[in-house]
Length: 446
Image (tube, rainbow, N blue to C red; front, side, top):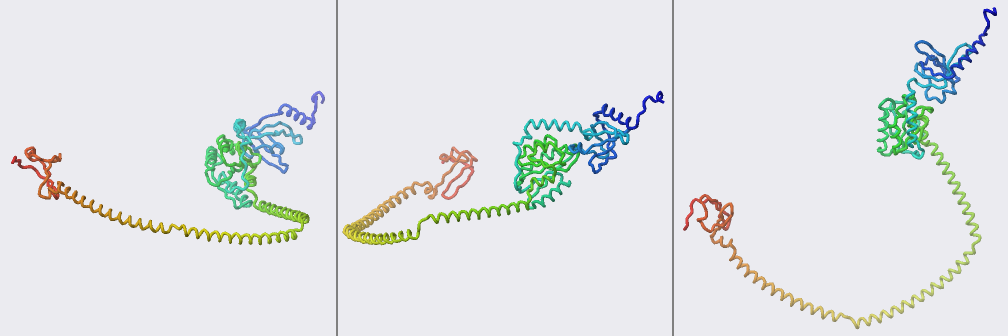
């Protein structure tokens, strides 16, 4: 027996040795395949099978490893896993213990994410100095998301429960696909022009890295950075991070958490105001009591004011009587001076001189009027003589006597010699009233 079987393994020993060799030789491997038979018991671990067209491999993702992963295994998904091979000794099965998992084909996206993150961070887009504070009580909130998702309903439901008076403007955009990044960036540029908006909430539900990729685009990051309004990013689940989260002024781990950050609880505000009012009332009463005690202490130190006021009243009566006597005496003296001044003014009154001057002015005015009338009549007679001479010299007056003025047309030259007018010429004859347009049919020297 010993020569035919030089060494006999027990099942446990053989399984243990196979395990040691597997773990030594395959300490770290990358395996791609399709997820099947996925299950997650109460322990929180993921148990599944990786398979392809020719084989299958059992795998396990422990709870401590998948908590920090953005992507969780899904039934039927093609994934890329990193882990170590080991043997589960009780059943003699080898399996892959996974410590990292991502959707197959998205490794390039992850690299692009890290490259863009590093470049934008170097440019200062993540600098906390650029972060704008959220308003304490916004009047209008702009919700930038897909209008058909459950995020809108959850956001509005929580907003109404916390503060129903606030207004929410829903700005619909695509949050997934190739056109989403452009729509989001344009919306961020347009929203500040809407009146009354105090804060913008950029949000969507959870998804894979590929689903959330529009929020990792550079145009979205730069649109958030140049937006003058505070921007809150609430994208995906708590473990999901995008470039928009780093650039935004505030990151909310979930859309529901964004409501708690942006919308203050009205009931809590009212309760806080009531507490502040009560505290202020207590402080005012305490200060009033302290001031009253201080006033009482000061009043005890003051002298007897009643005796002091009585002395002042006596002095005031004496001063008032003296003032009345002095005022009467002064009034009497002023009246005497007034009588004397009136007598002097009567003797020096200019009334007589004014009367004589008025009479002289009246006589001079009458004389001036008579002279003006005589001059006016003389000027009128001279004007009549000149008018008569003008009427005699007026050429229109000559026409009234039957004369006429003939002009050659179209030059308008006055005709003085009939021989200078050709036959057929047009002649205009001006008479006292009107004119005659004639044609020359005959010319005579006499």
